[in-house]
Amino acid sequence: MSPTLIWIILLVALAAVVLMIVAQRRTRALHEKFGPEYDRTVKSMKDRGKAEADLNKRIERVEELRIQPLSAADRSRFEQSWQTDQARFVDDPRAAVREADHLVTELMQARGYPMADFGQRASDVSVNHPQVVSDYRAAHDIAERDAKGQANTEELRKAMVHYRALFRELLITDAPTGESERPITSRDRVLADSPEPPDDSERIIPDQPQRSIVGDRIIPDREDARPDAR
Image 1: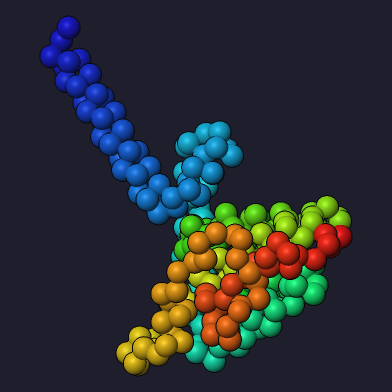
Image 2: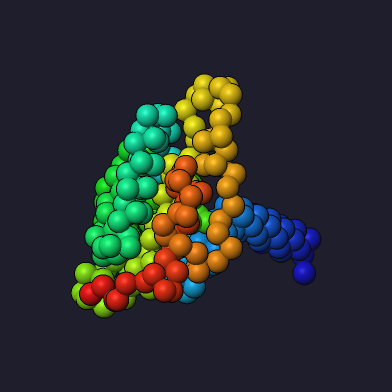
């Protein structure tokens, strides 16, 4: 074997190693950014390369959008609208879920996400909110089944929980410039720091005066549940 051929083989092997390292780093970076959404996309497409290309396209698309924070007034308005809708659940679960879907869509639009079809909206929001996009998909699936008369009250309750997860994150993420410099109020602390209810057996109607969407209990007790809404 000639020295030239040996060098060619070594260079090809070195290039292969470099490409492998680059691919591994890309995979690691995408997995860290998207978390469970990365795994879902790979499983859905059944091809890691195609899935990673899709995730990269999502990033490029969202980078071109003008995603903007909400003003304090808009955040307050959306929060009040959610509280009003949340209180409606016990008397009319189906209407409450429809309104929750509308509020999430309106909030996304206010933040700068384009109003494409649901699949595109979910892909867009997954870039900045990968931990809650699965909630969005689950809520939308229940809402679609409810439109066909196939969802019961328990499922509608879960839809409200899922919608709330995305709604809350869209609401409180990226406060306007200057707001972070003002004193933190008890209202802000409730929005940012209140823990989730320990499980889904809690109430949808708070047993104390409402302060924010995060502090609300949102699931009816079993004995309070209405008959299935169909």
